[in-house]
Amino acid sequence: MNEERLWSRINELGQVGVDVNGGLTRLSFSDEEREAKQLVKKYMTDAGLMIREDEIGNIFGRLAGTDPNGKTILIGSHVDTVLSGGIFDGTGGVLIGIEVVQSLIEQGVTPENSVEVVAFTDEEGTRFSTGMIGSKGYTGQLTSDELVNHVDEHGISIAQAMINQGYDPNKLASVKVDPETIKCFLEVHIEQGKILESKNVPIGLVTGIVGLRWLKVKLSGEAGHAGTTPMSLRKDPLAAAAEIIQYIEKLAKEQERTVATVGQLAVNPGGVNIIPSDVEFTIDLRDLSDELLDQLLNQVNGTIESICSKRGITSSVEEIHNLSGVSCSSEINESIRASIEKQGIEVVELPSGAGHDAMVMANFTQTGMIFLRTKNGISHTPEEWADKKDITVAAQTMGTVLLHLFAD
Image 1 (tube, helix red, strand yellow):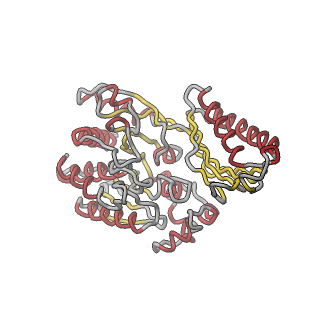
Image 2 (cartoon, helix red, strand yellow):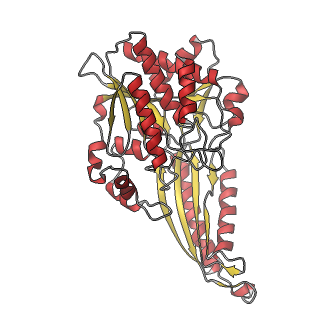
Image 3 (tube, one colour):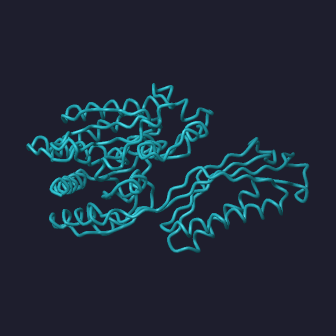
């Protein structure tokens, strides 16, 4: 691998979308994301790959194999970010994919199977509160209704945002590919945790990815004057929300691996001396067991109804994101394991607590994933950091896995 070239690209792409906080904000279908994708296209062209872009904005760089009827190996991640995120999340996986394929080309490797490096659209879900838009479109798991119904904070739907960037939402069906043409999907991603750092190893073998459920909850009560409305007569949706949020935290702590997060909270009208009339908040539930997630969701819904009934509050709960937990391919994992061992590195197996495009792809084709060590396990902030040597190790490992897959 050309370590300096890869490192230079990571840092160059890391200058696209820098915000006032010093982090990266590249939301889906934004000018910043478009600029990042244009730079990715340049890297793909420089690598000698053939470029195509589909109607959801997924970018592909293709190295054609010698067998025109052979299945395609897909490798990549995403380049969109959360609000004020870091330079490695998603981006590292795309650029490692380009470097791996470019290095193979430079070494005269001509594969039988075609290889495509992909930068999927909107993995994070930050703008529209629903993620994996690109990979879901690619696998046929995205509907036209979703394009219309999911809107950002300004009321702009996914469909309208697509139109604003020159895409045609009416051509969504053209994005889907035939799973019979795909051999497998590979992804490198930062760990976003501290396990690899605690084990003092640069990379890890991902065994599976947790399922997740996102809910949007709206509670409505009665606005009133903070000084003249007795406590016994109040219908305060924020007080109800506080009780619900405490319950959700307690419920997750009672489980072995479940995590629960309330990441957004909006209070209306938001005056210091006004009892709120409406409150909206989100719930993010995650666990490896889909059965347990469904059970917990039923408990959460029941508790919301009970608390609101007791307080005279009306409620509505909308599920805005639902992804099942998945296992990575045992066959590909054996190849990853062999590649790690070949470099004299301890093989650390670990599940992913975060969602990735790989979890969408795992229901579509064989999928393998490598985690990359990050400093203090920090991600989704400007302080996110991965070591140059660790990134090279991840690239070397993925290169060896690709060569093994070529030989299959």
